Amino acid sequence: MKTTNSRPAILAIIVAALLILPLVVHDTFVLRVVTEGIMWIGLAIAFDVIAGYTGYLNFGHGAFFGIGAYTIGILMMQAHLPFWAALPAGGVAAAIVALIAGIPTLRLKGAYFAIATWALSRAIQQLALNMEITGGPDGMRLDAFLNPQFFYYLMFFTVGGTFLLLWYLLERAPFGLKLKAIREDEEGAKALGLNPTKLKMQSFILSALPTGILGGIYAYWITFIDPSSTLGDMVSDQAVVMVVFGGMGTLFGPALGAILIFAFKTLFWAYLSDFQLLYLIILGALIAISVIFIPNGLWGTLVKRKAVARPRPKAEPESEPAALAAVAAPEEGN
Image (cartoon, rainbow, N blue to C red; front, top):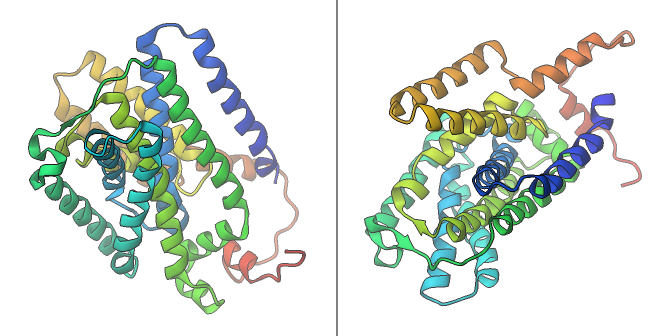
């Protein structure tokens, strides 16, 4: 319980540190690196909503990012909409694709769902490669705006921070418990009267929405998008590594994993940029190490060890998983 009660304090410290950071860091390059790091934190948290809380690994997460990027690019460059009008459309477009794609894919389980979402991302990438409106393989260049680096920092921070706060509230609410019940025992959750397909769809859309918005901000920031980089496997692969390494199904695990993996990536490309294959090998090794030795991830392992070290009253035997028991318990006062 103490760990749960400490969450608001941890959240407040993180927010305060990120707000103060631009005031003390005046180096544009450093601020740019931190800005990208905040983007990855948001992407990792959004990925964990479906992967960590329902147990459904979405290997098409990067597709939602690319959809948001291309949506804002098309609306700004061809429909001539301003950034503020085009940005929400990126999130809405990603959410609509999640809704449509989720109808067939969320009926699949395990590796079948992962493969189906990966195939979806490949299909969307092929569409972008062959459509004139997206610029085909040459990509799309957006008009450059002379916004200070702090503007993009603030945009990523606002979207990521708002979503983290929203998810903090939802994760503690009955909605979060129901998702955990699906992860622990989907058939048992169904027996309790829950609708797993509906809940997974809501989680899928909730994961896609901020991802699309982050993709839109990224396009506006970088001013160039193309199918290979924006719709490639890198976004999905990085999100998987960050969340697995940090701790799936935890509030702060994805953020911790994103910070550590992005810091490693930044240092690696700064000093060993000629060894691209080595970077991919190390990422694969990190996943293997995490799954074998720290299956709960860094944050999950820390929380578990803290709980074990704390004196606890004599436990009663559990007949069903905790999340299922919580969902099954009568909800009074709600």
